[in-house]
Length: 152
Image (cartoon, rainbow, N blue to C red; front, side, top):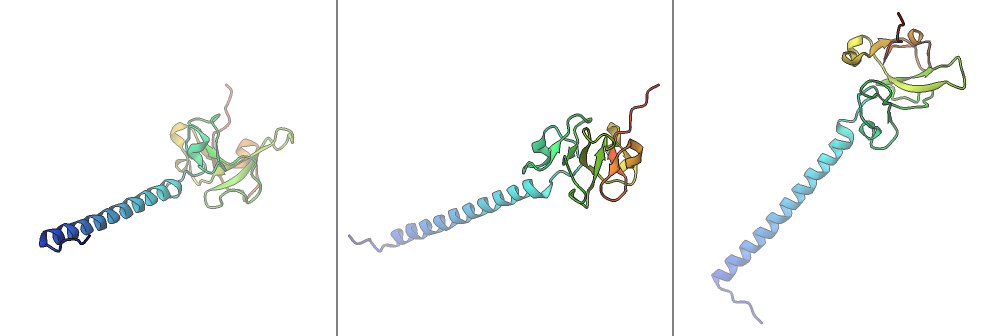
């Protein structure tokens, strides 16, 4: 069966080709946009050590960081850290209860220089390990933590 070679047929064929091409461009752009959004969600604004959280998934989709809900508004951290195992640009490893080996626990804590580097609106302060009877397993710099409660 031969197709008619009228100008009307050619016009419809040309319009059909344009529509197929336009659909391909829209599909490509949609996929590109979805890929950019997924990349941004995973890597663009990832939470830092010390950020507030309501669940561990809020701290890290790969499940390497946890949300310590025992602290006010949660605290994104990595438990059982060792020297130099914390993200160096944002945190350091601090061991709490080091004088009692059975109770000793280590966590990555957010680095700071002044209280305003921490979430001071909810009580976190820029402290040194000695302020909390803790031990820094990395360099001895300050970190964001809650000060010890004082009894009257």
